[in-house]
Image (tube, rainbow, N blue to C red; front, top):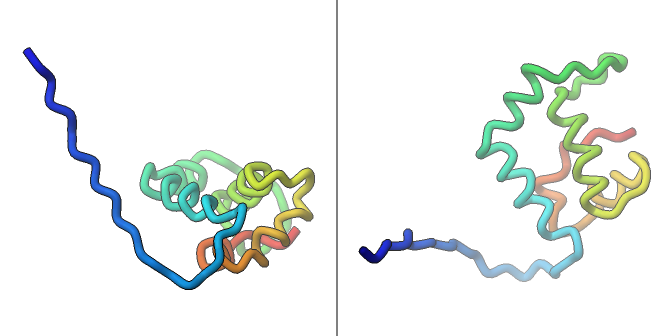
Length: 96
């Protein structure tokens, strides 16, 4: 019996924005939200810091995205925030 594979549908949008090395980070953010990781982080992760208005998810994603982008320290998160392409989805990354 032959298995039928599911059809994969990819949606895309043409834009005049340049391509950057950090262009895939918004996909990571959207995937984390789609999987409910934001709710899990906020429920089970407790970050002991001064009250700066950021959720546990936002703080953890700052570290995760910085590492994925090749950063070596949390101060490198500024590079992600300033990236022209991913700025719309990464603007909530906390400033160290």
